[in-house]
Length: 254
Image 1 (cartoon, helix red, strand yellow):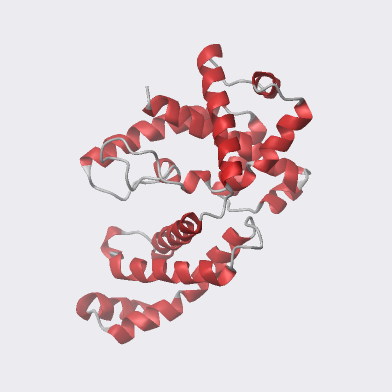
Image 2 (image 1 turned 180 degrees about the vertical axis):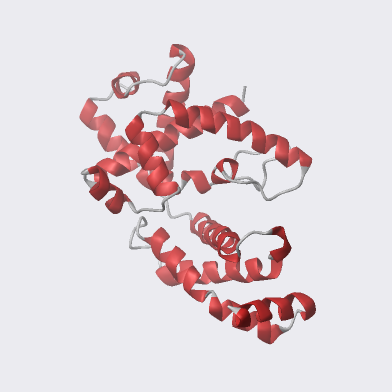
C-alpha cells in the first residue's frame, strides 16, 4: 500500500512515465473485470479484446486525471472511466441492429403516450393493446429490444443546449463530478425525474434495476436471486429502461 502511495506521489509530482506505467499495471485487473461484466450481457459477435482495449484507454485517462485530494477512491473513479470507454466503443461498433432500435423506439413512444394520456404508468396489457399486440407478442418484443436497453442507463442523454452533452442517465443517480453550473442544473432536474420514475416502478422492476446497475449482478445472477429465467429478467429490465427513458424524453421535450 505504501509503495502504491509512493507511485501516486511520484506520478502526480513529476509525471514520471515509469511511475505511470506501474500504476497502469497495478490496476489492469480492474479493466478485465469490468470488461467481463459487460461482455456477459453482449452477443458473442462482440470481441472481448476490443472491450479490454477500450477499457485500457479509459484507465489511462483515469490515471492522468485522478486527483487524490478530492477524497475519492481511485478504483471508484477509474471504474466510471473504464466502463464509459467500453460503452463508447460499443456505441462506435453500433452492435445493436437497426430493426431492434426501431422496436425500442416504438415501445418507448407507446409508454410515453399512454402515461401522458392515463396520468400514470401504463400496465403491460394496455401497452400491448395500444400496439395491437397479443400478450405473447408483447413479451417477445420486449425480449427483442433487450440489446438496446441493457446499457440504457449508461447512454448519453439527449442534448438540450450544452448542458447534457457529457451526462448519462447513471450519472444523474450518482454523485456528480462536474462543476459546470449549467450541467449541474441539468443534473438536478434529471435526477429528480429519474428518482420519481424509479419510485413509481413495480417492485420487481425496481429490484432488477438496483441489482443490475448498482450491485452489478448479471441477468443470470439476478434470475437466480429472484427464481426467474434469465429471459424473464431481461424482459423486466427492458420494461424498466423503456419507462425511464420515455419519462425523461417526455420531460425534456415538454
